[in-house]
Image (cartoon, rainbow, N blue to C red):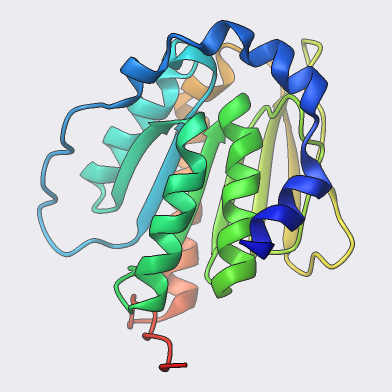
Length: 220
């Protein structure tokens, strides 16, 4: 897809990314999780959460997923290497009028890096990337056009913590939130930040109004 090539060319960092991914070759079997439990009622939105390296260091994404599902959001957690498939699936849902909004992407570490790519691709293809929340991205330092609202939480005690910048053409809202008291391996598990994400989702949903679903695209 043209959108994917644009995003990749703008934000990929191949050499450093390859070094971090070298230990991830055995993670494919761990990517598939169990079925998500059913929601108590109609979904209040769709949230894709992305773990970081090896599905080991981002267990806070699973904890956040559970909280979001309890609150009524259709939230699911994946390994970061699955971002392309999730982007394609989301674009298909949007174009057929089956994407429940708000649509949000949340990621930690390498999952934050690929969350930026996912939200950019969906936003550029459909205009429906309502919210992106990143927890301490490591290789990607800027946000391409696509997401409507970006909130970046980053720790200030280690080597990776930093704010994000907006790339040319980005027209959304970008917030950088430094977090003291957490490090790269604990920031994704912070219950206070989980509460902030839930409140931000509720606020985003309220701004979208009562429809909660993207209209199908007209036939070509």
